[in-house]
Length: 423
Ligand code: URA
Image 1 (spheres, rainbow, N blue to C red):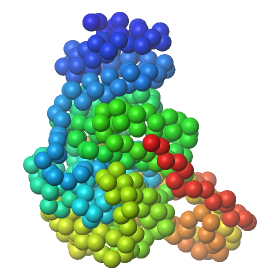
Image 2 (cartoon, rainbow, N blue to C red):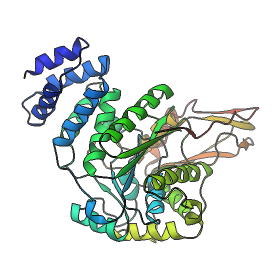
Image 3 (spheres, protein in one colour):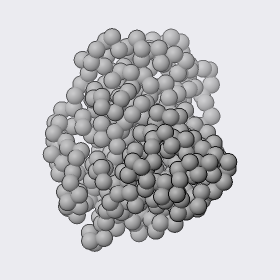
């Protein structure tokens, strides 16, 4: 095969034959196909798309580039969840221990944040002592004992994707549905979970702002999972407004613990429950009373065991910011809009996120919201508080927030958080 032929086929709108596509991915992993050639191919895919068969082959080839894990020996069902990412999206933190409280194993291989979307591992690392890196044996032992494990994906899973994703990041080719779908699903299928629930987000703070594109991504991923023997469903959920009241790392852990204690913001509770029901239905427990497990302490017990198993201290004080800056309402009225993307960017600029993969995050940095759309406020009332280690960061964060919220006369029409279920 020849990389130039493969690139030309896709450039001219054709379908790449299975053997040629498998060769292309394998040769790229072996560094025989150059980054420049793969970048041209990725751009051709972004512009001309791929058919369902090509997406399946592409996913399969990326799985074949690395190891495949198996949880077959566990003796309990496994179910994972993946979110396409958003602002204030800490749902994995309460969700994994909640689902594990029902005797199901949750292998949650997670990532770190880049840009305005936060990473689950960054949030959990706000807990003193907590360790993200586990060996495969440690992971399996924890799934057997505690049930839930949230840890870093090892470098052995879909190494082709690791290279390709980094390349797409610097060549303007991230936003191609076939490439996103094969990237996410190759890692989830290689991980070896029996079933998977996808939280595919649309709106201001999401990767796919357009709801129709998000739906197409969800359908593509559900088909890929199903074709590979992983029972997969998806929820299409609204990411126009930040989830919950905390955006950052330590503050998102704090909010997650509130949910596990039976409280917490209504939207975080609603999405946690909706996703838990989906996961437990796939694991054979469609009638599980997930609300009861949040109220009676079972989910909290499961959380404490999950954190302790990875050397974290669930009772330790979380880091607090050195500097805070509270923004107040300049007029009275109703909050009509509080837009996710600028709040995500502001939290990032405050130090909660990173600009380069090797940068550290500041665990205490972020934003605490005091109001949500629909709330009435009086002039002078606090709207949100910026949290940072250095007050010099407030100016650039405030700049990002210009026009990010609105106070009006009438409450906004309420929109559903979970728009659709895709099976
Ligand atoms: N997340 C991934 O893992 N891959 C993508 O392509 C996009 C988001």
